[in-house]
Length: 84
Image (cartoon, rainbow, N blue to C red; front, side, top):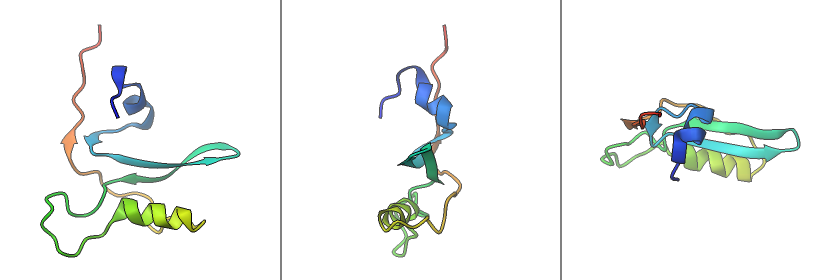
């Protein structure tokens, strides 16, 4: 996603890239269901991974809450443009 003006970045509080936010649309509005890392293997070297985002999506598709709702985001920090 390209976030011109970093509006969405500020609204969600994203600090790193990637920084995953999985959101459900409910009758009461949007609900953040999971926030954090994609998995526990940012270097891509582990044969056994915990796939946080994939597991959260699978749970939600089964009408369940994710077992893990937050992890530490892993990645490069979000670079900000100077505001005029």
